[in-house]
Amino acid sequence: MDSLLLYQNNYLIVVVFLLLGIILPVGALTLGRFIRPHNPIDEKRTTYESGLDPFHDSRVQFNVRYYIFALMFVIFDVETVFLYPWAVAYDKLGIFALIEMLIFVVMLIIGLVYAWKKKVLKWT
Image (cartoon, rainbow, N blue to C red; front, top):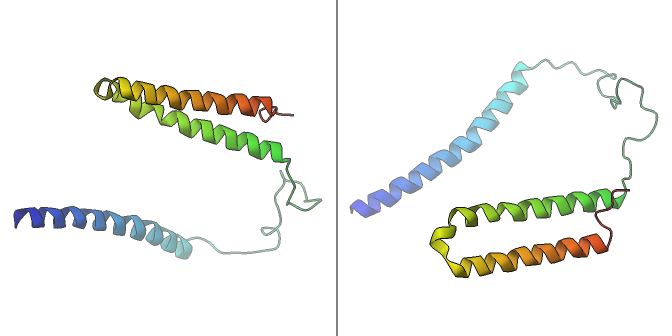
């Protein structure tokens, strides 16, 4: 019976945090909506360009290279985050984890070399 009560308490804590995570932001945004000043005029609704009057459409088409460069950065940044838990627990994991991480790093290097050969990392 005690173990059932313990599990229910664990779920109760998760539910409380989930509800707080939903109620607090929604409540803050709702309260802010009622407190803030609301005075819409045409000047406030125009596109802001460093204090200048807008002279063209604000939707500008960017070169796809910038997107690919950013995507490559995010991919390699996230992959290096996976190295940290491995480094912390390295003593407990042993030689098998070392071989697995070497395979992982070699695959990252192959991906980086492939991107370099395709000139994805060229900024111009």
